[in-house]
View 1 (cartoon, rainbow, N blue to C red):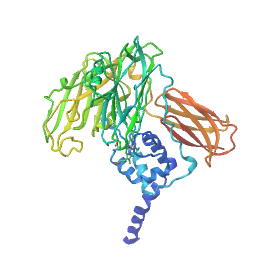
View 2: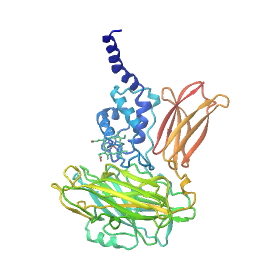
View 3: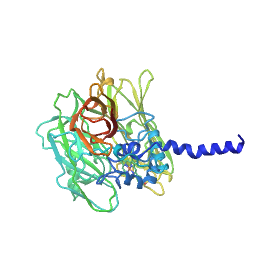
View 4: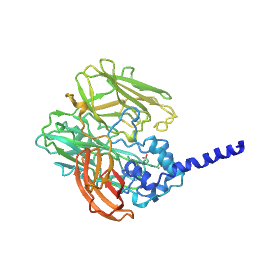
Length: 512
Ligand code: HEC
């Protein structure tokens, strides 16, 4: 073979190989499940994202932008570094998933077998947890002005409770998901919020970040788009006090049109006795070792804090907080023997996507450990989020142009076995175990990351519904094995379509 020929073969390989590899990805089998599970919760009609990604047409029309945002990791919004540690509701795409979507786009976006397409999850329109024991609504709706600006506002919701209750879940239902960017809940018994409310003529009071004072619980609960409420595991809970007020700290995103919101908080009392109450730890300016907390103009600064843990605790969630100059976080614990436990790393802080990051399992931090927190602030012009042009000297403060350094933890006192407690699986998954002709049964195996209702239907190869196996059936979190009676099905190829309020899957079933 002469060298020209060799070159031709190499060239052919270069030309054809990637195409043959990528040709295996079709919309219905590979791309649709990724988009419907990782994007559509925000990208559907009436929700926070500016356009819907709920079918082939919508996804293929936005393909170029999708390729850009997923390779830059700006979408789906997920700040924690998944190489450092994992959290519940993790919605980032893996490298393989990014490759699958981008090579599908490069290979001309083949649609594939229409019958294989999974259905959209049934995004909940009412409570996802059933009937609440206490419903707190805004007194009346609030009109967020259509001036394309962010707005931060606190609303005071009196509980009017005569006695204290143990709480198993707090569910926040934004009235207008198209404008609500995030919500932080406080619980307060001091009534100080009433004074702030009285000073502001409109309903609620304007307050950027926080409540304007330190309520009894500063970080009682919270909500961000794509949020999923869960019940605390048995024996664990929080409380709502008699005559307390729930404080709603709303962040409304920019909107070109006036838009009204009326958000509701659903509270579920504990059915089983609460033995361990949620407590919170706060790492703040007092723990900073290399202060004072001052960020000079045109400088990048990193501050380190240390917090000594005085009793054995189990961490449930972590919530770092800073404003627009924030760039990075790294938080970890070192136990008395020198072993390190990773708690969170954020490489690209984005004020808009802060969250309560719940660990996939309870994390034991033993007495005598030290929690280290380091945060980097960028007060130069290269930080696009810098609210000051030119940059100014920045101090601690509650306003948008000041800065903060806070890490909240929700924890409970440690009990033996906490590390092994499997309250919720970290991720949803779905498998179909092949049909057994001997028994006429097919086995479904799936893992759910929270309690939910689910539906399962069977379609034929043309997409026609043949059988509805179950509808709105309730399942507990964790691993499930579910036998399907398929003895009445004619031989042939079918598709099993499984949906919950946040997850969808589709699998081929061949009856021999
Ligand atoms: C948690 C909610 C949420 C999820 C999940 C989400 N998005 Fe978004 N997306 C948004 C919002 C809100 C915007 C508007 C811009 C912003 O606020 O960052 C947006 C904007 C975009 C844009 C436009 C970007 C631009 O520069 O204008 C694209 C493209 C996009 N998303 C694609 C995706 C894809 C693909 C996924 C899944 C892999 C996804 N998004 C998941 C909320 C979400």
